Image (cartoon, rainbow, N blue to C red; front, side, top):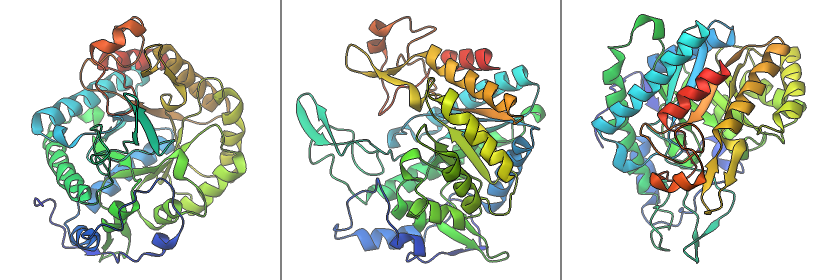
Length: 402
């Protein structure tokens, strides 16, 4: 493993943490692997990927957004590839985050806290354990942290050694992200920090470290982890782990969420009502958001939790094109994000920002703008999982929503 941030103030957290005994969905099947214990031990002894000072700075920036004084942009790939963990590709991704954030700052007149979906977005929840590829049923691709995108049974086998590759790739990406921090202009102060869905508990738990000075536990795999819609059960491991760490954290909130559950999540994850601690990432779909979101906003407001409200208008608006590929319509993305903003402002809350899946290149995975119709999807359909906006489409979303 490469050397990362040298942080003598951190100590290793035991791998037998209490949340590891709780139920958890969407986890890989690899505990039978003969080297699993050795791999876990190596990760548990590895240097942290991010510094606690960086995590606290990201939390401070999110705190401004919670108070209505800033905006938030989360942007990047649906699923990262280990092969992209090189300086040129990472630099291109960082510049894309900066470009879209600059447009958001220009449109809103506020500084933007920027987070890249990078340096850890290597695992994906899936709705089915199997998928059919070229007429052959295979175990679902769950991100390169777990298995391979290649279409064979052996490649799709869950392999814990991939956790070490994910660590090394993340370290390489973070080094390049840090190289861009010194060039940040003042009006865009605030990142970019790295963020990913903290899905695989074996990997994330092994990278929790304790600050010897304060006793706080930090998830050092990323600055800003989030829990997905499929893993936010109150009595499961992901919520328990997130309640214990001091990072700023996010939770995806879908159309099946009810106000009581969301308030309970706030109580568990933000017990001290701290601005910047908790971000609710709303992903309901353009139709359901009108009915499902208003009562949730009102309930959270009444409970007094200063959450950061962010719209993910991507995941609730995925459709299947006639060619069989998944796609998203830019018009649908804009419709949900605009409705989100209107609902938040009607309820007297701050619509802080957007969580978008965006490529740093001119892919043709979503329909709209420079991708005129479904027939153009095949030109550059390159995603490992879900369809992403290209940079011009992302700028169009910003212009339409703000």
